[in-house]
Amino acid sequence: MPITIRTVETKKDRKAFINLAWQLYKGNPAWVPPLRRDLGQTLDPKNNHFLRSGPFRLFLAWRDGKPVGRLLAGIDRKTNEVKGKGEGYISLFECIEDYECARALLDAACAYLRANGATAVRGPVSPTNGDDYRGFLLNDFARPPVLMNSYNPPYYPEFFERYGFTKHIDLYAYYFDIHVPRTPEAVAYAMERYGFTVEPINLNRLEDELADIKRVLDEAMPEEWPDLIPPDVDALREMAKALRPLADPEFILIARHNGRPIGFNITLPDYNQVLIHIRDGRLFPFGWLKFLYWKRKIDGLRFFVLFVVPDFRRKGVSAAIFLRTFEAVLKSRYRWVEGSTIGEENDRMRRDVERAGGKHYRTYRIYRKEI
Image 1 (cartoon, rainbow, N blue to C red):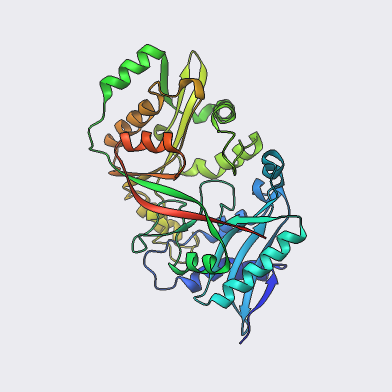
Image 2 (image 1 turned 30 degrees about the vertical axis):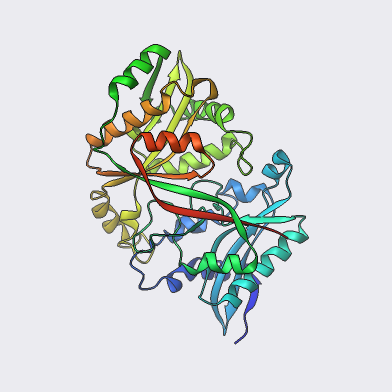
């Protein structure tokens, strides 16, 4: 039967868009189901600032009356304006193992993006412009991904390359053995010499802490990064609202010098170790019992981001944040940490991670194509 492509217009369509993954990954023990409610909120621009940054469409591929593929296509006009680009993006791509299905989806997405002024397309990117579902996994398909990281069949990158996409950037994930010796004496010397402190975030004064994080991002995010700009305060609030239920303040740290914020990191427990046991993606009526049971058994963390303002780089701030994080890990029930994802061109951060004991073990790829 031929493939037909339709845009998502109704609640029934949206439900089919969300539910497709359960069909494609049925029987795959490495796939971690998302919570259906969370994915539904991600697809709603009222809850997702990224979808408010420009036009977007959800596409579904159908064959014989059944959904067989999907993707989200859109344009981030705010970033395009700042970076002087005309790019569109693709996110949440899923497809049966049939190139004709992928081709039809990508044809529809590219036609939509061209009609809205895009001259190139990049993807897969995060549907929230965050650190979730970025890129296609290129290796290590037998093990579940860590919190918010991508998972996909090996044929997705092949389909994109066959369509004409080329590598835009590779993103690296690092594994940390928390028992690797650190250098506390060198960190203590740096903190005393340069006069900075590292303390956990105070969730009771979250607005003030978000203002400090925003200040660091404005100063620290490199202008030469082609695809990212500092989020605005409303976007940070949305992120904080989504992440707060997962957060342990001991693993979200802010560095300060005389009260000025100079760096921060975000590390979260690997809740994928919980979600993998909630196979239907629903907390109700009985998913909450599994959630509470498996939450106590999480033994790993994901170290998401670390930013340091330019005038405090090479002064031990990153090392101090890593050391404080691992000291907290050693006092906890957690036994390992993944640092992800780091762009291959981010030599400075890769060196910091490798000095802290990180071993590169997974790679994710984002593609790009002129349209």
